[in-house]
Image 1: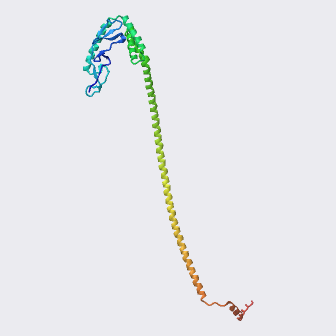
Image 2: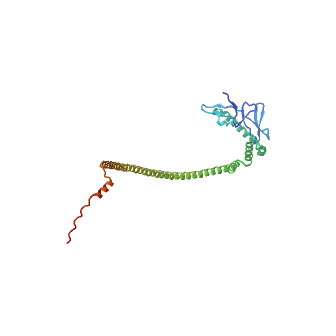
Image 3: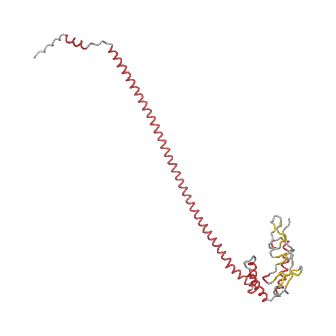
Length: 298
C-alpha cells in the first residue's frame, strides 16, 4: 500500500515538489532563491551573500514502519524517523549549518541587526494570522539575540517563567492545595460517617435485642393467657358436670316424690269416705258419756 510523500518539519518541499531542502531563516534575512535546478539561501540585504542548499529525499508517510509499530505520520521531525532515513536529512542540515556560518561571517553586524529588525517589524504586522505568532517569536529571538547577546535568551527564559509559566505553576499549586484540603475534608467526613455508622449499628442491635425481648415477653403473656383459658375451660367443664349431676339427681328425686304422691293419692281414693253431714247427725244422736268422778277433797 503506497504512502504520501512528505518532508520533515525542519525542511520544505522544493519548488518542483520532488525533494526536500532545509528552510531558509527569513527572520535572519535569508530567503530561498533558485537558478534552474540549483536552490540557494540568499541574504536579502546583500544578494552576493548566498549558499547552495543540499537536497534530501522525501519519505513516505502513513506507511508501516518497523513490525509492530504504528504508521509513520506526515510532517514530523526527522529525528523520529527510522535511523536509515535520518542520515540523509542530517547530512543536509550539517551542510546547511556550515555554509550559513560562512555566509554570516560576510555580513556586518549592523546589517544583521537592521535585517533582523525589519523581519521583526514584518512579523509584528503578521501577528494574529495562522503561523504569525510562530514567525513573530522567531524574529524576536533573532533580533534580541543579535542586539543583547546570548545572555538575553536566559533572561527571556526567566521572564517567560515569571510572567507565563509562574501563573500556571501557581494555579497548579492552588489546585493541588485545594485537592489536599478536599481530601482531608472527605477523610474527616468518612470518619464521621463511619462513627455514625457504628452508632447506628449499635442502636440497631439494641433495638433488635429490645424487640426480641419484648416479643418474648408478649409470647410468654400469650402462652400464660392460653394456659389460663385452658384451665378456665377445664374448671368450667368440671363445674358444669357437677351441676349437671346435681340437677339430674334433683330431677330424679322430684320424679320419685311425684310418683309417691300419686301413689298415695290413688291409694286414699280407693278407701270409702264418710259423708260429713251424716257424721254430724250421728254424733248428736249418740248418748253423752258419763262424767268422770270428782277428785276427793283433802
